[in-house]
Length: 156
Image (cartoon, rainbow, N blue to C red; front, side):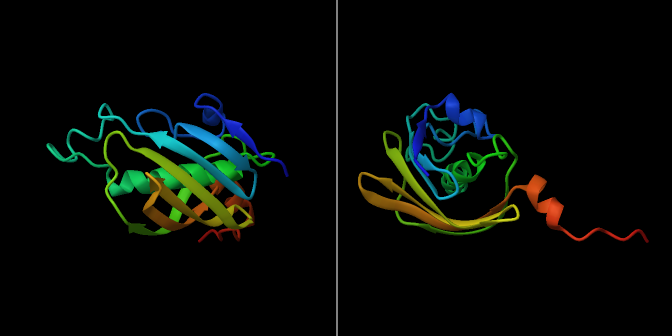
């Protein structure tokens, strides 16, 4: 399948998050069901920098993970029938390598290792200035799809 790019407006057709929680600015290439890569430009104007931390601003770890998750979900929500579907975290294993500070361009590369019945398993790596800033293994689901495969609940 051929890859394509999504600008900041187009990616919102596939991604449920909006400002201030949209943690990606552009998708350079998405190959539906396989991978997605793009970036987030970070400026001192980001809402999270002033409180985290005064005098030494850096991107909170939870938002680093969120940026990785949003990028990898683009690889699944661009599959036919999944456009704009809600996604949920199931688990993540994250490693922080360096601080992400105002002025950095966070380059995000993600890969889908498994996709079936609404469950996505994959990896993501984010870079600043050519150096790994953080990386994660993630399990994410699309509840709409997953629920179709769950056993029916018995009434008690």
